Length: 307
Image 1 (cartoon, helix red, strand yellow):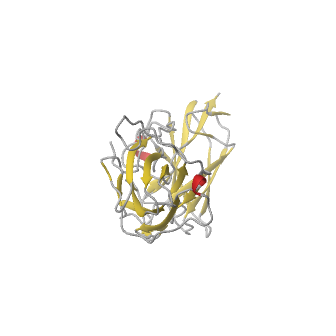
Image 2 (tube, one colour; image 1 turned 45 degrees about the horizontal axis):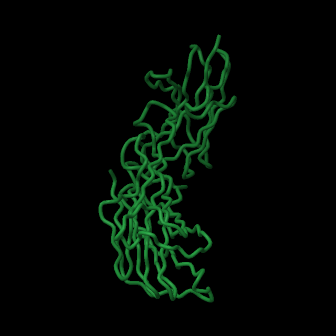
Image 3 (tube, one colour; image 1 turned 120 degrees about the horizontal axis):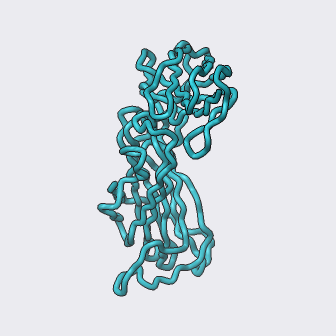
């Protein structure tokens, strides 16, 4: 199981302005991240949330929604927030139970090694702050096994909610807590920018359009029908080689052709299927000069080739 580590450092108190005590909401702001840039060498990101309370003790939960990027592990794993072995606050306040909800995506191919990464489920933690308190909550996010994409969004969304998510017994400070109502708030922290050595992100499309993933039946086409393949490489780069590949379901990849990107990173090719059955179209960025790490499309486009 992954671990969520919550740490802290002293911060300036942020007072609530004009909110009545009965409905006062805690102030939670995501102000800092470490590092400020991510590339192929980055293993983790720390997000810092500044917490402060009003004139009364406040209890609430914070729900973390991590970036959609590679988890640390295979496609069957749905966590990349590193938790919950140790949870701590520096300064006044108490943390309750951490509830983590792994997300298991529908696989879009049986080629596990080809996938760039998978979404993760949210994690929620309960918090009690005494009156007029301030502290910092830090969340560690594992970036995974592949280099980040240039178009990736690495901000951490979080939701502050007027409820507790854990289950507590008599004697716990969280047991039987009365929660003052306030409006649920969804916000984002700052986020590091992809910069340096990045992964090659290939956007692939076909005409007629193939089916993305295994959740739906593959697109039916005729044997001998020409399929136009097009795509784009991110970040834009000219003269880069893209290998277009085809495989029968459960079989091995065979390179159909190689294309070169234009000044906008775009490429084109054609495919005329000669065999019947389920066929998958893949695109791959092989190792080459230019500073991008090798990568492939996250999911293939699937066809049911008929006579």
